[in-house]
Length: 196
Image 1 (tube, rainbow, N blue to C red):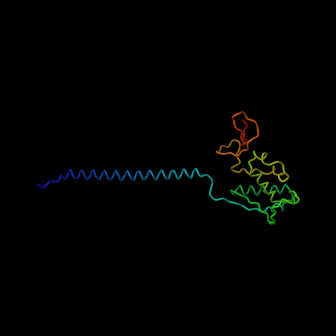
Image 2 (cartoon, rainbow, N blue to C red):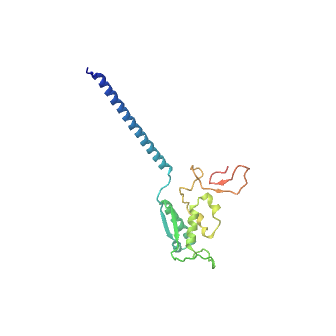
Image 3 (cartoon, helix red, strand yellow):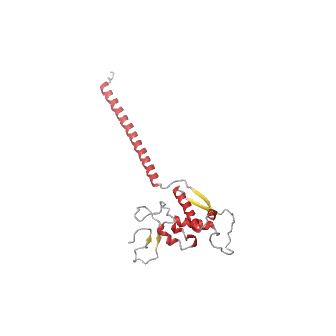
């Protein structure tokens, strides 16, 4: 006796098998799509956490550029203009070099001071450092000096890291104060905000 094939039943079984295969395939596609979306989201979050930029821009300036100025006020003003231009063009580093090329690594000899005919490299570097420092920290880091005599007249750079009192940010530059505090309360820090 030959066994009869029930075609209706066989067709229903094939349809069910095909349906299960399609569902399995769709589930695999959905799972792959979820993994890709998760990886893309992770990459996006990683990019957002990586603040700043990769390449840096450096500018080399000869210190003798200040020798062309006729007065100490103009020397300071010229240094301020160099600093302002570098801030506008997002320069990361300013290198002040000596054109004379004298390599004096000795501490021997007489210090001539920094005046009109003094070491312009040192004066330019000192003024640039002064301008780079946030205004609320300058009196802590820069004592009175002849090179900075006219630096107070210069326009502020308004760099991104120069925070104002009301600016909200994740980090702020500050200096720890040498003032007594209550026991167990830590230290006082001047970070350019209002006094508490």
